[in-house]
Length: 243
Image (tube, rainbow, N blue to C red; front, side, top):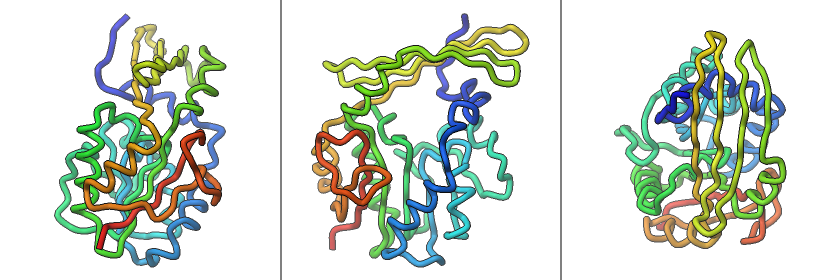
């Protein structure tokens, strides 16, 4: 079995199937409700970790000037919305020269940065690119979410002739959530992809944001407007630059 180093190089072929239950239209509505009081519909918008751009596709109904980015070319290329201006880049080293009124990242993409150095670089980049009155919103997965996900440690499926197994586990000591995919393509070639996420303690985000001239305006349980805390499963941060 061939091991691939590039995340989502092969998983990109089944990603839409893995996410088939996700209502991206509702998710876009939630993001708009989170952000509308801070930015106008004319805002310059940047998405980090956009994947196959389904969220950007729906959110552009509210914000026309949106640029989705992702580290995986295969994921960006799998987007059904070819009109979106997509950029392949690392969220820890963003190549833009302009400022953005809204920067966002969803579905715990930030958790894929498994070193604090990388989180720090992300927040530093955001601080540099965010307009003075702009906002940065992102969600992260916490430990209690991992505890729920590992209750179903093995999943299997088939999509358009591609057969896969998905194994999930959580190392509490190292705080690493691991997703491993064994995939057989239609040509019978077998592949293996391993994706790791770091489940940082809740308050680490506050400290690293502050270190980079950013502060938390609101912090909600994801998909709600209820205040989050360290016992939450997934949390949504709304962040601004320190004046």
